[in-house]
Image 1 (cartoon, rainbow, N blue to C red):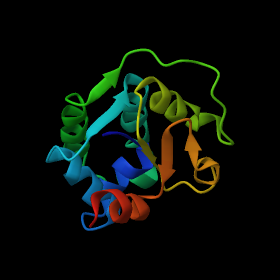
Image 2 (image 1 turned 60 degrees about the vertical axis):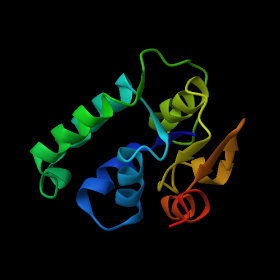
Image 3 (image 1 turned 135 degrees about the vertical axis):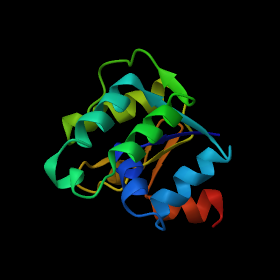
Length: 138
């Protein structure tokens, strides 16, 4: 099973160690699924972790460990173009799901319109809570 995690899920896993995002991140670390990421997402994590509001709650060392861990995921070099999302900054998530042949895209961002979409081809788009309940069965 291949899964794309929105950057907000990955950062949330670092901020709140007992929530659904952390449960999902730990499930990947124990090989419950294959994670699909990209160089674009790794750069987004680096950039977002430097935002003042996130610097106050993120430990740089933990961000570095996460980025190193993500290097062991399926890291896509190039992403296809032509994907549209309500938030143009999230179009790359749809491209990752398509290029990585993902079964699921997990996002907590209701404003971007991804959750309303529900799916992209064979990829189901779920909240972290739904992914934990329906897929991980936790």
